[in-house]
Image (cartoon, rainbow, N blue to C red):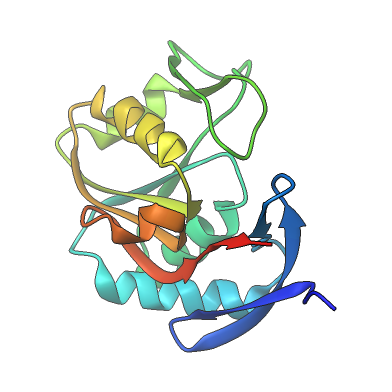
Length: 180
């Protein structure tokens, strides 16, 4: 019988992730940070130990929000969320479009200029939960660079497939694409 779970090691903390079919030949392991406070606290601590000094954290509006919050709480540094939709409170929002493996269609990421202007001349860490194709991360980087800041690190809890071999990201563990 085929195993329904994949066990992942995240900087010394293990989790059993449900295998989900990507197609008839491949599965991915579903990593969902929401609700796992113990892992969120652990991952934030481990990532903070691996990234250089920074002023702010930026994350896409996705499952990485609890991670950015916890990194902010532990470091005392503010975090910003690149939103998926413009909000009434936003003044002169800046947008980029992204096509990610985990979302259907093109999605938009938006940062309010009031928030973005705080990034000017500052050191920024861009954080996500999982890096697969890297398109979401790339979009956040493109978005925050419009505010003339320095990206000092791109970090995630896990890297999936070939993304794990990238030397421009900081990750805590590997998430394979599983052949059936």
